Amino acid sequence: MTFVLLGPVGFLAPKGLWFLILLFFVLHAGTLRSLTADDVRSLLKQKAVFLAVPCYALFSALWAIDPGDAAKTSLKLLGYVIAAVLIVLIVQKASDREKRSILFWSAIGLMAGQAVVWVDVALGGSLFAFARSDPFIASSYNRGVAITVCMMLPLTVGLLKLSLKPL
Image 1: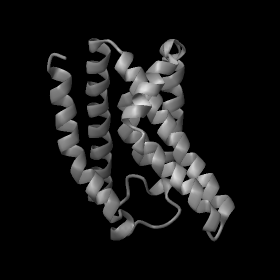
Image 2 (image 1 turned 90 degrees about the vertical axis):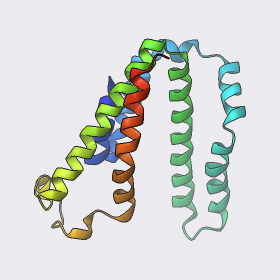
Image 3 (image 1 turned 135 degrees about the vertical axis):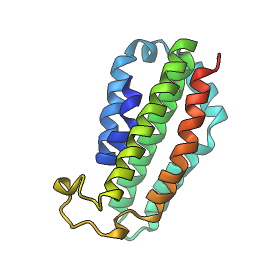
Image 4 (image 1 turned 60 degrees about the horizontal axis):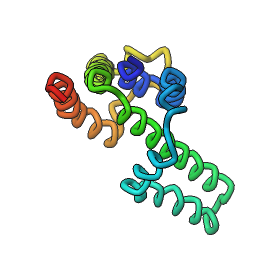
């Protein structure tokens, strides 16, 4: 059920997604405890390329302008990758019913987040003006956000279709 909050929390407070990840881990602590080293090793063998990015980032801190900040950022990235690996392992261990629920509630959460962005843009930023320190301008949403919002609808439809199919 924590997946329903992905869209709204991702829009309102992206750094708050860590809270959802920790909540997910607390709710699935039993599954985390049941993971074996073989489970982790098999997934890491398949997805080892994802560890290359934070490792390269940490290595590149050697010649960065601010090595301390570069190292801190690369360690954060490594934390994200490790959290993603653990989430994938937990979802793989879930029952078909739980997997379907995760897909469904992720789709609902992404739709909610997308609706919030559309409404905020349509209202000229007045929906969340109270939370902004700077006034809303048309370019407040950058190209990355625009692309993400455009991709959200096909992703959401795909998740909904998968959640309704027999697994």
